[in-house]
Length: 449
Image (cartoon, rainbow, N blue to C red; front, side):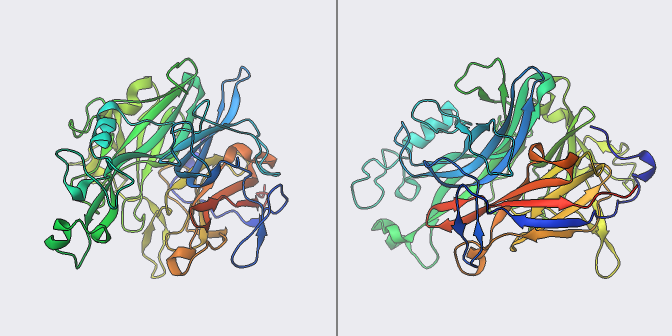
């Protein structure tokens, strides 16, 4: 992959024109959105009731092993898997079908016989903690805690959400970034100690909070299940959280630095964006070398883009070792003419190199909106262009914020015409515990010259 010319790197490229945008409706499935639009979502297996995320990467080792790998978050099944689970926090699938123009019809989910199963697994400590907090009598009215567990904590659990994936065939591996979370119960507003004493289930709120972002690795030669292994972080920021490259603090609901979206590889480095401002604003950028192979899960190997206007006493290097040196990336101007910063998407952003346009492109779902935006830059650090409207996601089933689709991601391994045609999917709620992935086919105008 080659970035844009150095002579252009100080300015953002103009947004490429969008020639056409269409939501595929060519089968084999046909659904109707709440606004009456007929569409054909990805043709997933009938055991999938719905899930979100839906990021992918192309793995091609140059010797015949070639497939797209997809990472999903919370997944509802139409029937229990071989372990009796009807709900999974993450799922992953290989896809040999690399033509999205007629949907995708070849899904090989991780999990073996009786699958699918989670492709990124909890460790022994997390599984033991979950077992200690499980409901001891699901047939009884309300959650029945085990010995030493308070009623309010009954049913609490660790879980892992799938996130960004990126192929690294030079080292015969795929890297999957994930979020370790804890789902927990808390007393609802207006409830009292008396409700706790009476074990009033209506007063238990079901919440979640992040624990940290880690990385799992699949290799061609790995023999552990489907080949995914969570890595223990070298030089962790929080030694008590040894699998987290980006740990979260102990305060629920706070924004914590995490560089876990827009993952892209360029010239020997893995770049990752951190859009942890309000509504995924003020994105920053980190990078880590892919060689040596273990550098990705070595916290001390990561560097942060400090910008040309940095305090050179506190941050002498453009790519600084201190997280505090990371600055929001420049991206166009605001309506009042002042510089704007790069923003991210609801549930993440995809960034890729478009070989036909010869520029990096970011595509994402605008938070609290069905708008899907795009931006371009010559380099991962920008400057990035102003945002443009790529298209509108179909409204989800629901009212108000419930009608918003999210998790818009591009899948460049399915591109056509050298990159001028791209396919974008997004998570679209279609009913109770049901969702799908409509497909947006985008054609960019041929660049001049």
